[in-house]
Amino acid sequence: MENGKQLKQWKMESEKWKAAITMENKKMKIENKKTNYQLKKGWQIKKLGDVCKIEFGKTPYRQDETFWDTDKAFNNTWLKIADLKNAKNKKIYDSKEFITNKAVKISKLVKKGTLLCSFKLTLGRLAFAGKDLFTNEAIAALTIKDKIQLDKHFLYYYLSFFDWDKATEGDIKVKGKTLNKAKLNKLEVFFPKSFKEQKRIVKKLDESFAKIAKLKANTQQNLKNTQELFQSKLQQIIDDGKLKIENGEWQDKKLGDVCEITNGGTPKTGNSKYWGGNIKWITPKDLGKLTNKYVGDTPRKITSLGLQKSSAKLIPKNSIILSTRAPIGHIAINTHEITTNQGCRGIIPSSTITTEYLYYFLSNSVKLLNELGRGATFKELSTNALSFVKIPIPPIAEQKRIVKKLDQLSKQTQELTKIYQQKMENVVELQKSILQQAFDDEI
Image (cartoon, rainbow, N blue to C red; front, side):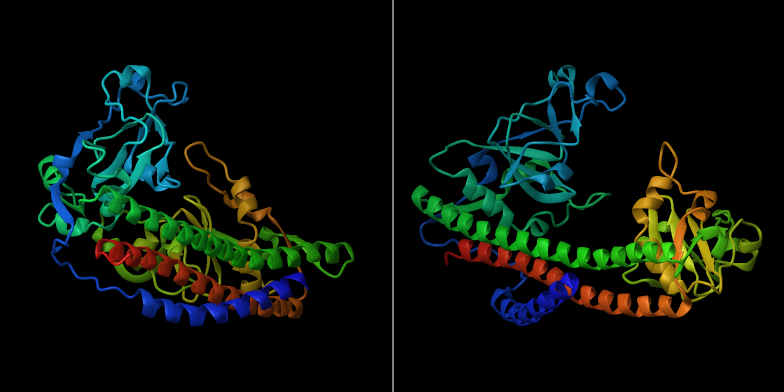
């Protein structure tokens, strides 16, 4: 009953959001043109290198273990660009990697409160150092030279709005866009001459972004609630099934007793005679990219000879394809005959169990399947371990009734998920819109 009330409430909310999203899209639609800034009255232009001291970090020699503090014993935080994603309230405190005191001696300290900006590959990711720390060479530390000329928080918002793609035109390296030191120094910064006006704009933006952060958090929670609703209903069915097994209404079977489980294989990739045929061939990575429970076509295909010369097996349509390593737990129903690599298993149901019921059961058992995995480098679920997984089996008519109910709930939760994901996209557009207003002198 509680799940039904939640779903009804969220469905009503979804209708409101459909209308709200339409309105937001109209309000927040901004032109995505690359135009030159026009200097506004009371504003000035300076080169980034003129208003900031720009310093760069470095990466200690990777092969020297004495530089890397894997136990985090010294608390010398060392940032990469990916770490900047974890900034909260514009500040970054922690990182995945730490360096030793020996490495500190050859590294540049970034003082607490310094503005950090990525300028290679992933451009314009920003945060303030929440503590004294160190960075790699893809992050620039920007220290304001004259603290009454330019507010560092204004610069943060300006660089958030900055057109990094335009700034890197012609600077595309092997791995992506990047800026060199000279171009970084020459970047133009537009800001009000009045320090008081900078502070006013920063205050407005802080207030607006605080509201946006709250909206984003609420949306993320709603998205989480939507996904948890489906899982809780699925778990409820499994729990009810355990009681019915005790009452003798359902059977408790091992997966290997009601299904045939097949292994996969990969033909030699260097032999062109094995590849480019019409036999579908799938990997865990391919499974992970699916947006629904069915797999039809596959990115790569093998030939009949490739099938013969490898351990791959043809899996009949309407079976289950399960990834059993890297990672364990991607699941799909194949709508055509298919083969897999060795990172997947084909699970072919017998007449006592429907494919769709098996799909939902395994979807709810991903945690268990991972616990059964073994391996030091990466976990792998063996065919033997998979075959011993217990599954509650109701009569076929009951399986079909359960599947119908779960299909309906799945459709409803997918609709809600789509709405909340759209709302998250709108939040991003709203941030852009507010920044544009600020630097168009309209805030």
